Length: 460
Image (tube, rainbow, N blue to C red; front, side, top):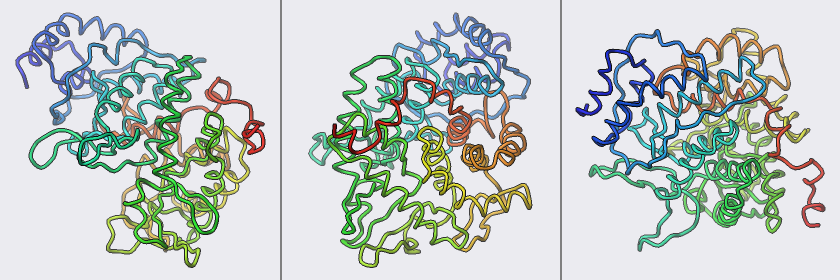
């Protein structure tokens, strides 16, 4: 710990655990440390005037921290967003967003995953952007976007910019240097970031966000979609060289498929047939789930173009065909399509694909975190992130189970702005996204009227 940090943390024991953790998670110059020393209590008063936070937990061990890029002058806790009207869930969303900004987002906008060697990912930056625009926090949105744009470039071997997508992984390499350490992109992160950009343009009247979204849409289409011999166009999880192992086989990740986003993209980018990805998304979801004996989606799945059949990924691959932490997100993405676009395909899929989980819940009030294709539990523990992602789906098709999950698994895991523990970056994001009310978005300017979503109207 630096001397300057020590001065901040020794303010007569008056700083609460959350603010202390925030101080520890950042690298301060002497000047910025002195400034924070004089303003820390003002910041605390500002925060506690906005939300009711209890600071009674004992001190937790310090999280490890990593070197960071030069910090920006703006602070992600400079302004406090509000959701209206105020309800218990909305209070949680507001409170947990403030804590998330303190714990996981540096002053320069870098989102840190403490559970994975303090790395940053395109996924993390995109989640922060989604949350920022949903809760109406333009400052944090700009910070997280700018950090990603400045640090996640996809460069060729000669150092030239290849496209406007983001490398998926940034962190410390084997030699101790910090920077991009995998040049592949992850299409789910780019989809979430583009969605956030379009919403930000509409919510805050920022045309430059729409312009950037359109540039990224062009590259996403060119580099992350592929036309199959069956006439369908498929979303790949990343670049073709990584997910097309042979001319007749592609690897897919069902949790990357976001029909609601493709409908949104069709509104702003009529030059490309984004609605075709809605069709192929439900084709992949419905048919790949049949590979599982209990109808569950897999983290990863292969499609053989020769036989037009879905099959599990070869066992020697690092990618696994198992229902686990990736696959949970299928429920959230499909539920958003059902909630916001009244998609009958979405509702039908949710009713069918969740049946096994509904039966398990009604029998044991518990769901294992990993399930193989035969429906066998692979672990003895459960996962808050799974319950979070299942919650918006159950809210649509089985409200009784949704209420049980909320009261029995989500709210009990929430404490002082954090789900599970202070380093659980992934859980913080999925739990927060799950609790967003569909009315918050449906009654906003985020979407145009439903009649916009036919190919005929898009072409016109």
